[in-house]
Length: 142
Image (tube, rainbow, N blue to C red; front, side, top):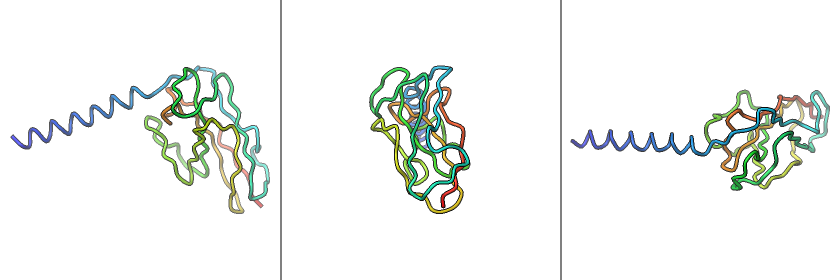
């Protein structure tokens, strides 16, 4: 009996999480684009890098603002693969959140080659259904 109750409890928790994740995914327009205004692919930069984000056919809104066809930027630094696109994006050294609706930042990078990529997240930091993700660019830090 205890095993059945435990199994049922686990099943309810897992199914609730799946429903919750499905409910926090927002659609994006088919023609939405996120891109880098600065720096450009292949550019050589100093260790303090100004990064300016571009967005087309969507608006920018801060995290927590559930407004149709909007999102906020996440900057992926030196990531090999995209994070799980069905869950809220983690915040760490490689995934920078701009939940205040910022459209530019300055980052410090070590000398060498680095990759940058933008990923738009909705009000709950979850990528949109049809993720709005930029082309990955490479920069060289002197």
